[in-house]
Length: 606
Image (spheres, rainbow, N blue to C red):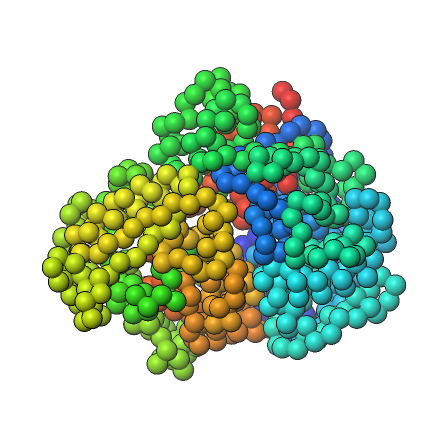
């Protein structure tokens, strides 16, 4: 398999059939597993392909975050946690290779074995696996972690746990999961759960823990110090058990990883300019071009790096909560999208330097294609024709304005759509038949200056339609509480998607997640066609059916008109960093994503 998961399509269906057949018949323990075919790296691989296997250790990596935190447990719903902790401070049985869309290699587990149809999976733990306190990682720890996360942990863990029929110890270092539903991805997903030390949590309410407990894990980094809401510092564990296994070779080289927290983005940027931070990720291309000429950049002490990637765009924009009655009608949502003058906003904020997201999986082979649905995509969608939003089968594209501030044509169309939905202009305001005005709240987190600039322009356009949109700005604690409880009308929304979408899609937009507090289904969508496309995707046994299922899902989501899409992340990330912070010239397909910074960076003096 190549770095591009889908490139092997050119080998033909015959070759694919051979690959699938060999996979289904093979049940011997393996060093890794892929969604389709064999994993790219051989059993004797030395290191991940995008690392410097001989990288030196040392140095400090300091980044800024906007907001605050009141918990160090990233595995529960309660509290605000530095997001990085979930990924750098914990380990799982298997680990991702970010140069393959979905392939896993042994981490805490030395091998993986599956049933003929992946109806079960068995892992063998490494004898050498240790927690940071030196104790052995046991099957008992693993089983406790899976059951606790699946029942008391964050809702993101519950869906997969509900598909486990049984979990059993099958040997001194072996654990087997048998599934109760057909789902080829489960054998992979089940290997990605964080493993905690059971003994640490005896007599403790797991779901209520916050800053009182620093969880013990087996990861290369341990929490060294913190100040609530201000900073968290992690240190590289000099006694880390896995530094010589192939998956870890050349990774986790930085000695100290520190996160500083700020009230807003301006304060964070000033801290970077002043040298308090030594790495800063920039999402605004205009700012990247115009505001990074301060002295340490000009002297070369700070380097500007651009990291290309091959990921889909995901969806970024302003989401409408369709649980609210005013957003239940697709014509209303289309009107609000049409009134959003993206072309003018893009020119005003970024000089039109950024393209617009056109669908959830755009900029990739998984994205929906222009025009009517064809072939397998149409085959998958046709049985659900009665449940599909207009445009899912026929084709749907975002409205485009003339770029002028007035945006008259699109505002006229938006008004017509509102009238079709039962909202008419009465006394200068849009009202329904009962005389109730069209009023809603736009919820924003403090410090989101770019979002505020876009919303200011949008508010003015809505006023011309007779719509009153009030903007509420709140701190990160209130924001998390309200979004976890779906207590908003419209808010900023970002969902990244990968080259290998799978079970996580149910957390994003399935019927089950619609009323699950803390789920990522902020839009409140529930459509049997969406659930069916996710199921089809998870059970596809060919690459063609898999792609068709994702493209079909993309059509239903996009035509659902739940999000006002804004600019995409382009095809690269922009990171300004200290010249001593280095990374390999050989980049992963995912680019600047999970597992990249600081995981495979190192510190090197001139």
